Length: 197
Image (tube, rainbow, N blue to C red):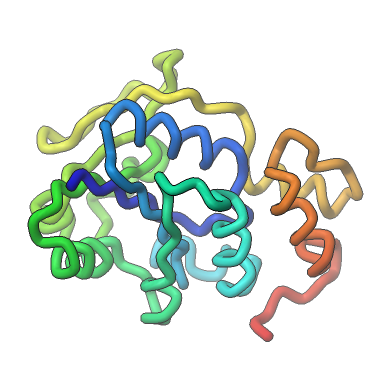
């Protein structure tokens, strides 16, 4: 089995995440790609705006019923700081015979040396760095890692949060189901408290 693992805050998940996931499944010939929303990323402590249960629900809506994808709540269930090495160790225990691929964006790779046990991360899975086809993400990649050129549309979770706060449309930025969820729960509006509950 060829298993992809794609972590992130997904605050909110958007079409850029989905297109990267589709490209990874197709270009790496993955049997399954699992999206894993973080509870609290160590390098983003205090920056995640939305409670984990909302980010988890939106990530599930992002992939819908597409059988190529799954969403796993292990980091949220584990709570505390979300370390990639712990998540990959859990996947290795669950799927010891699988060939595991850990997907990260080129922006995330810049902090790789500050991760917990980066060498063990590289032992537990093949690190796959999602880069733009246009070559703008050129950088040094660890020898044990693999570069995967992918379509990367110019959209970010930060921009989506700003659009919601300004009352602007999300058409084309997130799937309709995610946009509806954001509206129904009043997420990302100016002055709205984003504490759990």
